[in-house]
Amino acid sequence: MTLPDASATPADADRTFQVDLRGLVDLLSHHLYSSPRVYLRELLQNAVDALTARRGLEPDAPADVFGIRLYADGSVVRVEDDGVGLTEADVHTFLATIGRSSKRADRIAEQRGDFIGQFGIGLLSCFLVADEIHVLSRSARTPDARAVEWRGRGDGSYTVRTLPASARPRPGTTVTLTPRADTGEWTRPAQVHALARHFGSLLRHPVTFDDGTGGAGGTGDTRGTGGAAGTDGPGASVNPEPAPWARTYPTPGARSRALAAYGEGVFGFKPLDTIELDLPAVGLKGIACVLPEAVPAGRRHGHRVHVKGMLLSERAEEILPEWAFFVRCVVDAESLRPTASREALYEDDTLAAVRDALAERLRAWIARAAASDPDLLARFLQAHHLAVKSLAVHDDEILRMLLPWLPFETTDGHTTLDEFARTHRTVLVTSSVEEFRQVAAIASAAGLGVVNGGYTYDRELVHRLPEIRSEVTVADLDPATLTAHLDPVDRETELAATAYLARARDALAVFDCDVALRTFQPASAPALLVDSREARHERTRSQLAREQEGGLWGDILGALRQEAPRAQLILNQLNPLVRAAVAIDEPELARTSAEALYGQAALLSRRPLRPAESSLINRSFLDLLAHALRKDS
Image (cartoon, rainbow, N blue to C red; front, top):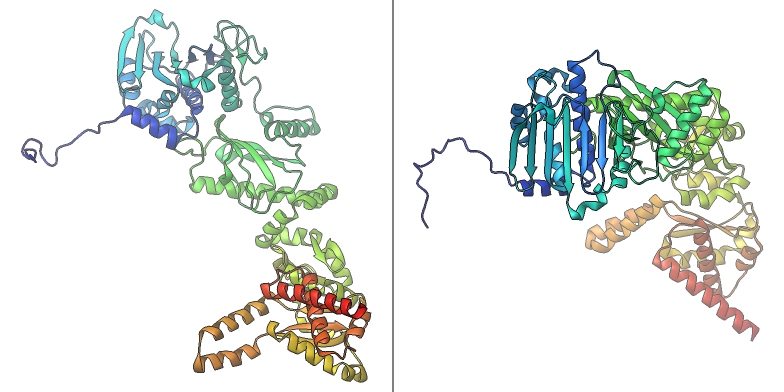
């Protein structure tokens, strides 16, 4: 191996990066941009920024002087603007140097916040659909400026030449692409027109489109054939109207209907209501559309975010907090910072402040509905009570305002806490859905007021009910509380059932289950299985630990296991089947009947069955069937 001469190049000498443009374009297409379609957005953005810079030079010019013209006929795509334009020096500096933005020029640096783009790589996105980019520009900074032509190619080469002013009579820039054969999906006339409307429908500068036939890109749309100022020939308006929140309406009702219609057109559903969003500090305006139907908990919808009129993203989740999944927003902002791909928002202090401010707007809407529109509030809560519950957990104002109106599953059916508290001064709440289902019928018959606390947020919210109603007491449901409300049987009946209960306890010992005889309503319920998830977990943990440990530790853990909460099968003496079972003298049949009663009670609890319980249910059924067949024979 021959080593290079170390003296040939000093170790600390400056070196220049060698850029493989094709590799860079591949990197952009696969890792920076989500789709080749962004090339048109980048061209529109550059045109808008050029017009913004021109406006800085000529602030007194009429608003409709400057426009953007698009042309696509299948063979070329062309974007033309009346913006500030480029000199020959600008072309060498900004178009031929990757990573430098013309928006960094000293003369307009102080206006940087007025521009959409913050990165100088937008033009490279055109190589996603074309092998050559042709730029013809004339600067508006010098009255007698010559036109400059720049041709960049995908292999990294480019040429620059100056042309007479007549080559472009007016200041501005024209970018022309010759699409590759494999990019027709993104460059055919109808698609170019659709992309222009998609990205630029809220732009503040007039944008027109021409497909060379006098139509509107093959879509059959002939609106706006008058074109924009400075447009020669026919053209369909891409953005014929300003944003709906920027228009004036004859009445508040007309405004509300127009905003709702816009939201329906954007999102495809008729909003339950629309909430106007206005944050002057960051120049944000828009609407939030309340979804008419419930969405899965935690599912976050993407929101449509424009920056200075240009569509940035349709999936911007970060603009609202997680609990606000009952709305979808479309907003246009001046001061939000896009990421490098300009397809998402940069997470910074400004975005955090905007998110908090928009959250406050949603809270204010809920407060207004609660105070002045009970019908709207009822329809909203019917669809989105879970979202409101998640908000109420962390927001004391919403809690005080809406907790009495929120629906819960109770022993009185699905009702609000306000109505439930009128009947039950002591409210018991379960820790799981299965616990509620175990006790609901018996607790209701016993006159106990129990709320299902097994759903997300419910248990925590029910415990905060005394903050709203000081006369109400809330406590977790204790199995002992329920069993205390079950009436004991008389002494004679209990003595007669002693033998059966002993056999039943022996049969169910494998499940750490005690057996008792009580009377309770409804009489149709033969048995109640009182057991909690925590108790089952504790028994399982103790059992595993005892099996894995031996000797002294095994004995100690075994003793502790005896203190672990046990399940309890409570047989109902009022049920005819139970009365017949406790009178059984045959030991095996008594054992089988106890197993069957346990299995039936476990099934009614609707909790997941353990393998041993499933086996017991099958075995007891077959044994009882065999006994019945033998008896008949």
